[in-house]
Image 1 (cartoon, rainbow, N blue to C red):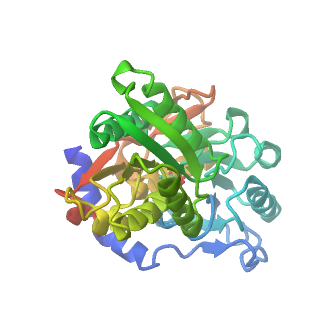
Image 2: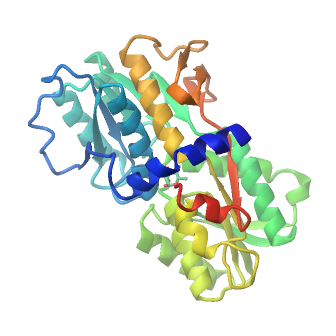
Length: 355
Ligand code: RAM
């Protein structure tokens, strides 16, 4: 933790510039075809595409910043594509346009586990290296996945936080992102698995609501939960967009309902604290800059032929250190960034300017 903390603090200056919109020169919205007209390899540089879940999600922008920085520093070119909507269909059209461009690599945060398979197989058949990060495709649709932390660890950690904040009993609800997102569903399943422990028998999960990683829909869903469940004690939102929207609703309403989940310190700082006037006592996240960087190093190792994505291979991910490819739960392979960090009133001010 300490070593990572120092590394994270060293990133601070870089991140400030990322948040200001620098260091992300490849960012481009789907729909703007400026990048399409340039044949991917006409400069001789290797071209690495990152396909995010959707536009307008600061978490995705921070990942894109880390990804872009390490690849550009190594002399590669980056294209960041945000699909028009947080759907698999929108990602398929982005992937198809990247195949036509002849990029060397595609890294995707999947809006659906299985629905990208045909497009990604077509890309692999065309010699494009395929990796995932943040939210996985199925094993057949990728060479390797860059995972933030183990699903079980995330599920257990969030369940323990819900138990603690609820005082061991009572109603709680989940505010998720889209209903098909692999990562969200894996974390919810891991929470439900953890919940089977007798310790949690007095907690009642009332509903899993979906805000689709849209601020307004997440706000509406939070308000609906409050009116449907007057005895609700805790909302757990394992999405940075959802937790930010819910924090505002609860705090503005002076609600007694408390919040935890996965959030960006930069967005949650004003809602964090133990007093009645604050909606979020504490939350968790990994380092999204490092997740983007590890995604970039992994894509480069695939393109350079240093790895194929097979279990047991290892590679050097710059200052992040050495990573080994291991077997993933879904039968494919992954590299795991880890660890989860807890953010609370004691450290939020230190982190809010970092990411
Ligand atoms: C949202 C997205 C993303 C997830 C984070 C925690 O931004 O759903 O996929 O990893 O939250």
